[in-house]
Length: 226
Image 1 (cartoon, rainbow, N blue to C red):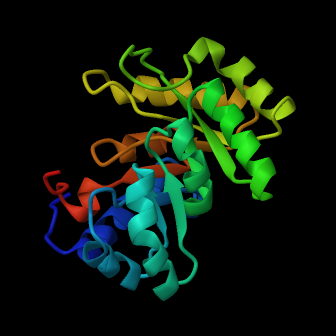
Image 2 (cartoon, helix red, strand yellow):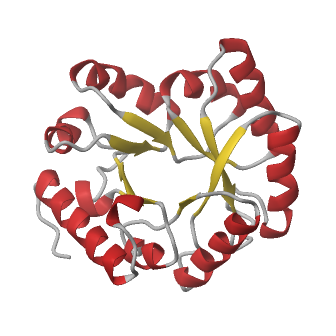
Image 3 (tube, one colour):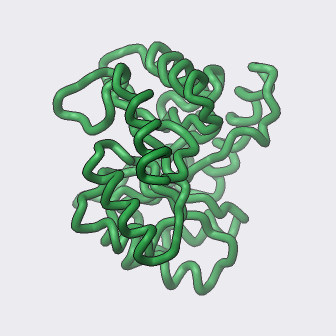
């Protein structure tokens, strides 16, 4: 895909690529949800994508999302916002108030903090468990061998609405291997949602059953320097 400077044009190309990848895999394109990753991009950069009718977005940082999305929600209806970055326990309250889905439940401390906040505020958000498919020591996520027990505890003891799994494959490994692993773990746990695939590999992820692909650079361009 040749990236253009206009986010709306880029969005259309990504949507077309998703349709092609889904159809080539014998899937209905409507079963693949595009999470437009708007982290580090300001509201003026996001508005063209909203004007094009897209409503599903992902953000990495709680404070950044809390700062820019309330005004956008006031102007555009139907927005769904996913937290796709690491969640710290001291940000749980703000995250629950800001987001519609938490994709990065990666350890029991966060699972318990979310359960406590859901109970306190009377709001229950769908959650995905982040799986460290590459078992990388520097990366967040539940090791593959521990996912089954983790999911069971989150559901039965904490009452979390665990709907799926997400992963970020190691940058130096074939992503297909990690997508296949995530799909296998999801299947045996009865989880329908598989959030996997980013700008460089989302078409591959679709062939392995991704229900959500998280695409930022291919839509918004390279993120601004922080």
